[in-house]
Image 1 (cartoon, one colour):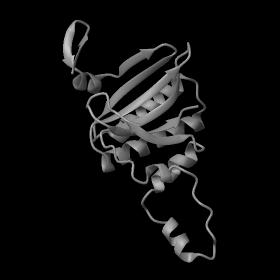
Image 2 (image 1 turned 180 degrees about the horizontal axis):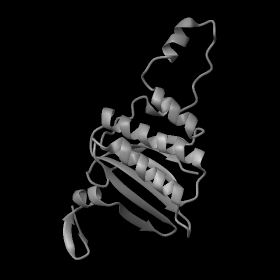
Image 3 (image 1 turned 90 degrees about the vertical axis):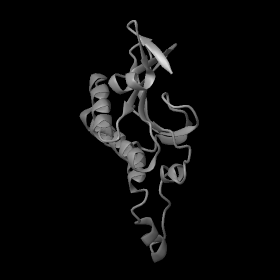
Image 4 (image 1 turned 60 degrees about the vertical axis):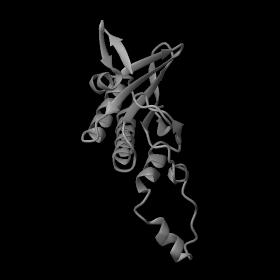
Length: 174
């Protein structure tokens, strides 16, 4: 797919790598950044920090949400299929960032929705359940749930730079 930018036709994928792609739609605007696997975590942190600081978000919340974006980007690099995109939804006349997601081209959600829910209350007498709960798999998504106060979700989507079904893991920036 090609798009004209300032009179020059460039492939969308090349344009996404260089600058965010904006999609205005009434009171909403979405911006999309393509994340390179070698720099995905760092770039996700930079983008989220810059947007939230510009919006006047409290420093502690910026730190937490920046960490969430980095964790989801790292998970995307490790477990998903490229391309990897960071997408932010802006709302209102001030275009405040309200939702962020990391999208990829792998449609398999697996246990992700389950891991984004509150952890079950375990019986202290059930040692096997306690040990299973300490496993390494999914700890990052449990952290995402905690840092976003449960305002996170996983859902099917498509990426802007590749046809076909994929998935996104998103979280509230409010």
